[in-house]
Image (tube, rainbow, N blue to C red; front, side, top):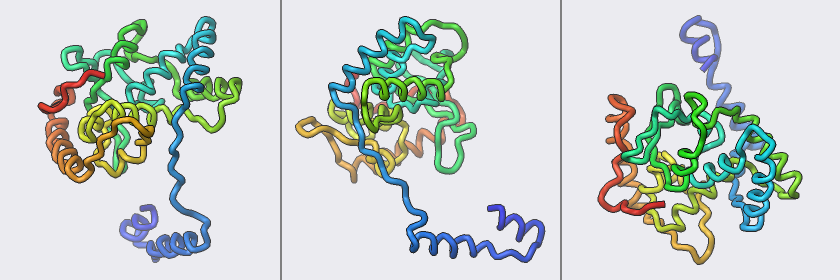
Length: 246
């Protein structure tokens, strides 16, 4: 983008295509490549160990890690998203909230999206003290640091706070939710984006009608996007086939 601007705006003798040429060479030399996708979910033993640790820790700490961690594995929200949620954006009638400046591959500024809370996530929110505008008024880096220290103390290997998003989304599929229904919680715009977070355990019910669901999801997203531009406080459209309570 910088090179294109230099060429088109400043009229400098620059060839922006050299970037693509360099990128191709670096790929051939395996100097760059796609990042490896994680498929990590906490085990039952790890979840129990974290619960016990956070219960004891929270008695003498400012950040309620037990609630924040359980909110993460039940809401599908990222760590920085947890710390941005506002009380005023919650709608108890529809059990929804608004994620402001939601992550987007092109732009997140003013990309405000309404999402559904699971029942567990909603209950966790309701028991938080209202000390300000934010539901979880903590720094994301502090939350992640507390989680990392807990894993180190417990000897838990290769588990990141962000893996809680994998856990939450996989649980929704295991409960029988369809792709387009899970997207109401996670705010993914396509099945290709959503499936990288999906690792259901064997023997659990997981519904992956990807072809039909992708069409439905993309159609719903187009409709919701046009409505969102006018009203970020619009209730989430759940459809007639989404009666479940999580």
